[in-house]
Length: 307
Ligand SMILES: NC(=O)c1ccc[n+]([C@@H]2O[C@H](COP(=O)([O-])OP(=O)(O)OC[C@H]3O[C@@H](n4cnc5c(N)ncnc54)[C@H](OP(=O)(O)O)[C@@H]3O)[C@@H](O)[C@H]2O)c1
Image: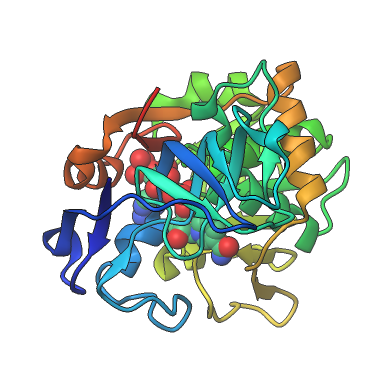
């Protein structure tokens, strides 16, 4: 089977596809034929060493951690009823391989029949971060919330989940995404490619800013003249509030398996929509990473390993 390795902290140039022998599951493992892995900022930011403080992996390591796939073999101590199951899960040893061997874990989640494996793949590193941000900020109905990176893999879920929760959503994005974000649940969109001051003055006053960009200059512009603003970011660890009444928190960490199950159920019932920017064959991983970083993407780029 082939695996995708980061062989040096040299960005996409350090990515190599390598063939390694197939392995059988040990007694307690299951073997998954990988269907998709997401192309995450985590991967391309780790690839330069930028996240070395958060990500313990050192080259050579196998890329990514999320995956969906189908169970093709089980160890002697595992239930044979798992065979053929469609699963969403994680492999913290690196998921970018044609076959993943996985030990028992609470994060092995059956994907409902109505949900495509591609759609399920967008939940990890996407909807989960949105849930985490909303929980941290204690979002409730009636709040007015400003969202940066609204069209991104996290932001597109944030907009939907905030709308579900009854918040007024101000989505920061480029004008081409206005109609799409309105359909997802944004009450208003703010064009970050042009002057923000007049747009913010005309919009309802947000009390909470949920940030998925981590750009200090942008945070400063959004917080200027907004003493009531509480800022929660998944993308920046330190930002200095502009006023004593403002606050800043970095948000990180997992959500519970039952929260993933709820997200999968919401995809199944159509309450949530997965935004998939593009899907690439895994051999084209470098091209996929490059495309995912281009402006104007809607949602998550995926790598496909098998159908
Ligand atoms: N702490 C955690 O647990 C956690 C979890 C998941 C993700 N993250 C981090 O969260 C960030 C977002 O992840 P993602 O997967 O949503 O990324 P993504 O899918 O690449 O989306 C990023 C979005 O940011 C927008 N953007 C980029 N530069 C901008 C700027 N200067 N001003 C305004 N908007 C800008 C892009 O819009 P355009 O297309 O218009 O440029 C795009 O919509 C990443 O840094 C990631 O590492 C953290």
